[in-house]
Image 1 (cartoon, one colour):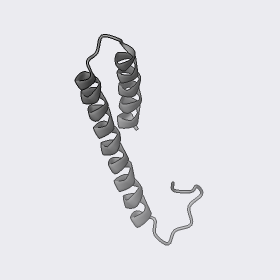
Image 2: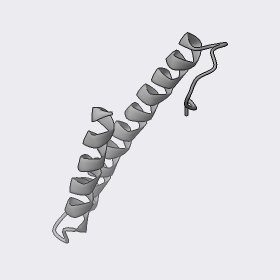
Image 3: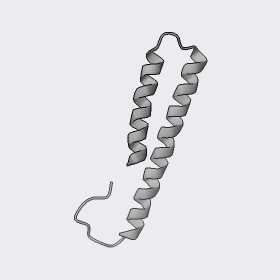
Image 4: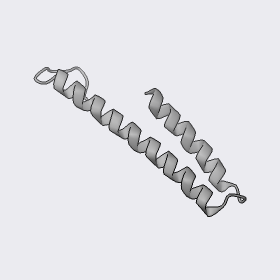
Length: 67
């Protein structure tokens, strides 16, 4: 969950930087590539965690859905 919060903060900062008129196109490309990489990494971690939970609870009736 902490990784997700970090990604949100990073995205906000990146958005503010990109809105700055003084950035060069290559700077914007670098920032967006880094943010995109962080988001993809977080999605992979979340998927792995969800898969692990599904495997651990296979066959059990849970009081909540695993998303």
